[in-house]
Amino acid sequence: MALIIEAPNEIYSIENSNNVHMFLAGGITNCPDWQKEVLEKLKIIDGLTIYSPRRANFPIGDPNAAEEQITWEFEHLMTADILFFWYSRGSLNPIVMLEYGKYALATDRPVIVGVDPEYERKQDVEIQTKLARPQIPIYYSLDDMVNAVFDAFEQH
Image (cartoon, rainbow, N blue to C red; front, side, top):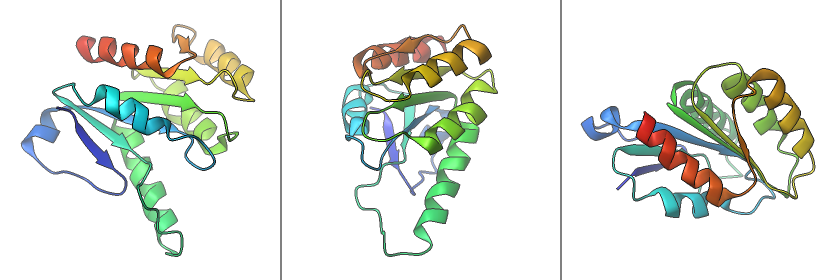
């Protein structure tokens, strides 16, 4: 079974140290809980650690929660072996755009990117990807992205 680590947690273990690490980047606020769907399908992969920034309970009243969340995401985006970016309907995902440019398009790490057909800025993702890393396919369903994770994991 995959190790699934939700923000802001961490697991320090030999297993986690030896695993392939993947970060789920994508919208949270005003977006469907797409992370739950992805985690359910990928939890069967032994040797995979999945970092999910979506918390079951975000402490909105805690003034330190945003810094903790952003720092946790920053650290795991910097170190993930596989980057998984999903542009969900429901939000323009401005932070995801920033993270995509910084961590996915500006590196040579494996990237799996998908765009909900209802995402308003779909063309922006397509054009930026085509310009920076044209070899990266863009998927238009979570199921296709999940299949790509299995392929990427096998190649890693």
